Amino acid sequence: MINHAPNAGLSEVINPEARHYELLCGTCGTRRADDGTVLGCANHREPVLLRAVYEAKTMAENAELSGVFRYQCWLPVVRRLDGSCLPLIFRSERLNQILGLENLWISFSGYWPERGVAFRTPSFKELEAYTALARLPGTASIPVVASTGNSAAAFATVFSEHQAPCMIIIPDRGLSRMWLRTALGPSVRLVVLDDADYSDAISVAKLVARQPGYQLEGGVFNVARRDGLGTVMFAAVETIGDMPDYYFQAVGSGAGAIAAHEASVRLGNGEGGKLPRLMVCQNKPFTPILNAWRRGLDYLPATSAERDKLAISKMHAHELANRYPPYSIQGGVYNVLMESSGEALASDNESTRSAMKLFQETEGVDIEPAAGVALACLRQAADRARISPDATILLNVTGGGRAKLARDYSLTAVQPRLRMTGAEAHTDKGGKQIAGIFP
View 1 (cartoon, one colour):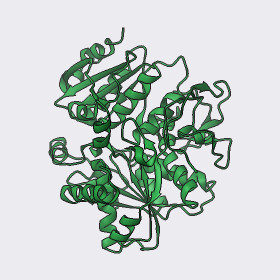
View 2 (cartoon, helix red, strand yellow):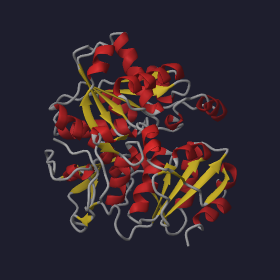
View 3 (cartoon, helix red, strand yellow):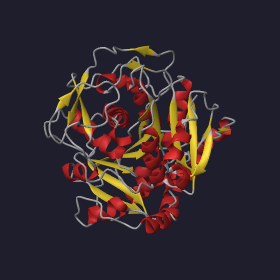
View 4 (cartoon, helix red, strand yellow):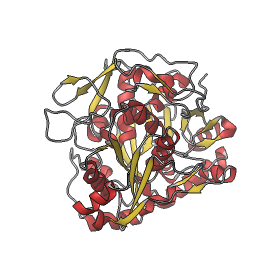
């Protein structure tokens, strides 16, 4: 049985000199060694997704370990860190009954101590924060992270605990996610951009990363982040005993869905066996992935920034607001949807809130808006008979228990080291000013 509680007392080097994997470019097939910071292929000017190819061909879980490092043979890491959790995987009797399903399983990443799972920032973004740090060499430049809020909270918590330097840039809306159980450590700096969105945060992070002593953390292009998120699928298959037929998740960038697909391919040894159908879910009215997919496009058409920002302002699940998801790149959202015979779905705000209420009533714990989007889309698919009632379904509840966490702990509001408008930050002067907040 998987132990979902945090690791205790594990913070050790595995083998920094002999990494147990190589990096593969899916576009040209080039393989190369990893130094812990590589984000792309030197053979291509355009961004490409690299994949980690591991020496281990089958999943060899370390049963004595309780967090993500249980699957360290399939993680691009050189050390183990204390404090990580795995999601709780369980079969929901009441939701199965209400939705008319027989084999619905939940992956819950959040704070639910009664069920033995206690993510300190109630989001599956913690999975990637631990693996991203565990991949870095000890001499790395300061990573710069762009986030809408949940990744920021996860990276702030993990890097603070392990006294590792990190620069985090978020739009002002993301501050609502920056209530933490412990104060920000001195190794972490938070920059808030007013009158800005996630796309602005990404652009500014790239600008700062060009300054001496900094490097872009990478987001979806960081193999450690994707493979960390892939542990959701590893834990699910270990618990269920088989690969699910369907995988439902709300997406902004789609990194979690790409990670689930890559993990499924790895579990099948890449031999073209059964793969879960990816059901990626977005929140109306901002649905760029859905819009392109439904039109049969393998690229995202150009859109108006003003129109996008208006649609984003009307979303309930603001954490899903990514204007430039990795849709068209090799191995990106379009490819994994095609390879898995997947589908793109969407729910409106009313359906999302209703789904959040349903989960609270049936399971007794609150869930995040993004998770509500995924449940709402699953509910619609079940109502419209788009999925077989006896199919094995994995619903990724990517965050939950925030209200419970606030009742159990006195949370601390993180104060930014620097605050400026997005327009100010987009200049060379702004980038240098942000870079200067580290001594």
